[in-house]
Length: 73
Image 1 (cartoon, rainbow, N blue to C red):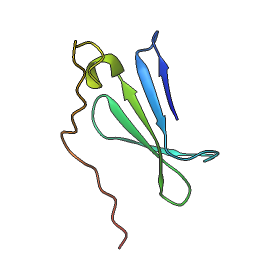
Image 2: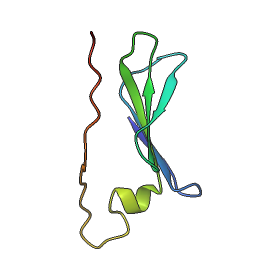
Image 3: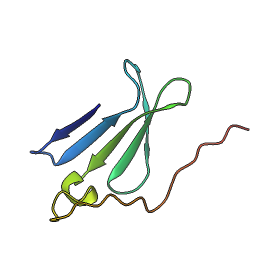
């Protein structure tokens, strides 16, 4: 599920339903990752979403510049 708030220009991508409390990790200035109790990625918040996701261009393009990996030791 993806939601978009045009007033805040923010999008939220739900990767899990009913995830309860989350820990938020800042990936960069515009992207925040939410982790659930078992350290699983449960959601992604994108600020300035129209620019980040390309909604402000005639031909939207989604580009991932870097990936954030979580490793268990």
